Length: 253
Image (tube, rainbow, N blue to C red; front, side, top):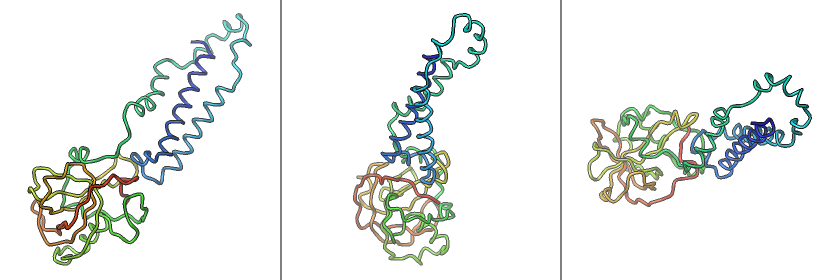
């Protein structure tokens, strides 16, 4: 591979990486992978890739400025600076995967691969954000807010008839009765690698009509109940509406 070809190939991969990150930022799908506090760092990385790639394109090629004798003299040094095809492929992997795999948030399928212990969920602290992109209306409690209150007041009777409006996706496994499911979200501290599921048990007579992983808005009130050996408040649904995932599907601790 000639130095000019190698340089332009490096530039193409760097520019592609920068463009990929930038499009994920503009569509907000980058929030499917990372905590929103890292968005600015991702933007800086995208700009950096684009600038470095552009500098390689604009830099004059050196191929024609070397004589044949000079190339032979420095052949060993040049070989050390060249990137192998394997190296270029490794650099291109993020772009290739990003193109082939459509961006999507974690859902019920990911939750099935993780241990879901309802009794331990209430130990997780609530987020401090009122960002409406998380599917939260200002002043409205989300799943983590309710779990925090359950933790502070372990008596399920204390929440009797308290109204709630929750957005999340449907999850069910063999522990659920035909009329119950869990309305769920993932909390993300850094990125999806540390995502942890949280949820509230919902009682709804038409639960069999709900598809797993379907996002829903649940409106109802709490009643004392039990699930998987734990006594806890159960959200008795009065209305359930199918909905689309919010722009930011995760909750932040």
